[in-house]
Length: 238
Image (cartoon, rainbow, N blue to C red; front, side, top):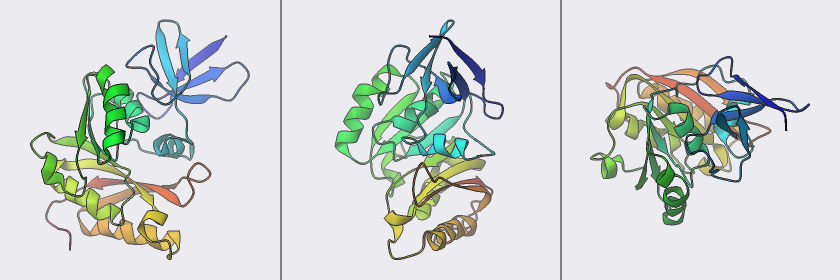
């Protein structure tokens, strides 16, 4: 099969793979050649192997396809990933940061963390699985070091507050956060736009400057991805 690859024009560590006559597909360079994570297709081009990145399985991939302007996760980044589940998106983050970066993967569900360990982290030296409640970052404060970025994708009622709690402990000043807001996990009775406004205000009140807000339809209904820069530790969660 003929295939071509090009670096993404905006984001380091992200690629576009062209398969025959089809439109280009997002991909990352596989840090664990020969292994996939969630059934994604592996494509060998010259001496490198790429993992196709499914936007219907990964909110970060969906955001890129929806016009994300800034991706604060890059080669060498140290990332705290809250809500890593079984590693679908976290594994692509691992590919992006490479062997000189690191991904701390916090997950609360024992079954998911087992899958994360056995199928992903076991084969990647730049990922640390952490079985813990992301609402209580003190549980893993002895494990996680200072990070450049936090990626938060949790189904909790107070998603922004949870992110702020972790930022206060682990995120360096002028570091970045990416928050996937799931409006139906917060309040099914409120309009999604009101939920987004409420959660974004929590970030603003706690030292974050909002860079962009990307709606994720059609990949994820009633979701947005918020990108924000952490400018101050002087304000605290009410």
